Image 1 (spheres, rainbow over the protein chains, first blue to last red):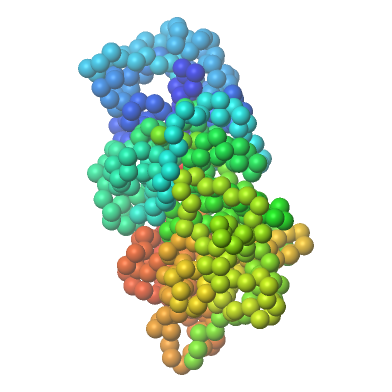
Image 2 (image 1 turned 45 degrees about the vertical axis):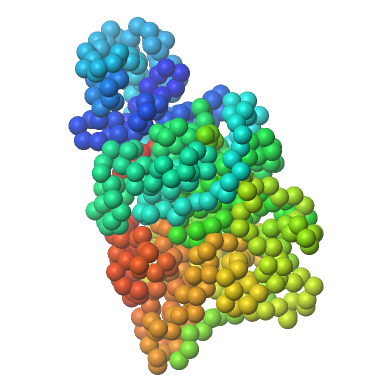
Length: 340
Length: 225
């Protein structure tokens, strides 16, 4: 079962799809909730599609009580009786989030040491798989002025060298990018890829590349960045990218990396995280972006990429002789704005 | 028998010659007329200038240094699963050139050139600057240690982007089994199954990839690896 968890405007939306997920550890512990308490952010303004958008209606449940001592024991109330059909990711049908639960759901008792947090009602949608949340069309262009209006423009941008670590496990691009961003923006060397993986996966991780390593798994960058405080509020934009000219606008005001998610178009459903850290405008109109790729194929340093290829054909351009051939290339699909 | 590097198309080399300077750093001493504007986060990264690489744009293209071009092939995940083999499945992803002042210089850039639709014109795609570029070049010059001495091989560089896998692909002239030499080498390899020995048969290499494909994909939304 695929479970997506998103928190927006006081509503915790859990989407149940058709694929299994490691987002929840055994026993129903919400493993995809970041330590620190703030679940993955949603894009502001509704201009992008967060998890679960565009899906059919579902079931309303809640409110739920989360003991603040940990987020491990989320107890649901009695399922509500509101009819399905509400718009996922927005206000649940039948009530305003955080007010009376639809259907008269009953919250469970808190077992934490701190004041419990009541969240809900929860909207369950039932038709989204993890890949279904990718937009079918090309990603939209982010309104950079909107992003800048919420960005930490008051900070003194770091003046050190931004360096991308090579990912130490085959699935750890998210960890390498997060640690590299953190090293640049905050006190360096506080985090390692292993330490971060242990924190967000809540396992004892070590470097032992093998097929059976439980820590060697994909993860969401918005959650790992949030876990160590490096995601801007509402800084994750899904199915949305930055126009070349807006990169210039952004970096002129806030010269810190922007992270990106590349979705591979070879049918694998795999995706990969990178960071962007500069641009070059050529005399003949060439638009190039400085890419920091944690994969071994990034060769441990920056790469200047043609912006159009980064956007639509990362790593492998289309075949001009056979335009319908499925190419093992990727496209820039999601964007993440960071902060110290 | 030698390991043969197929020659790059002249049009691809021309694209390198014309396009590379716009992918390099501006030079505070010698202005780079190919670059109008350049901005980085933090301090300027270690990107060489054209002068650092000894790259000259005012020479006749036919007299350009060789720069050891590598033919790049890419393998879609679906092809890995299909079992058709590399030769039948891999697609052309262009050419890569090791650009440096001397063949052993540690200041080296890996310039990628590819064809673009709809015309098929060759253009610069990317330029890699990391320390791994020199290591890749040096590894490409040591491949004879993995090849049989009495068989000729054609060298390509195989990438499987969605799986973070890259390898030198040595295709024998006599039709016998191909040899795959993953990069980074097995001591630094993060792909389980490719960290055992320096080289693999095509069957061993593909079976490792298939095992990776079949590994349970427990994805949470918007994840990556």
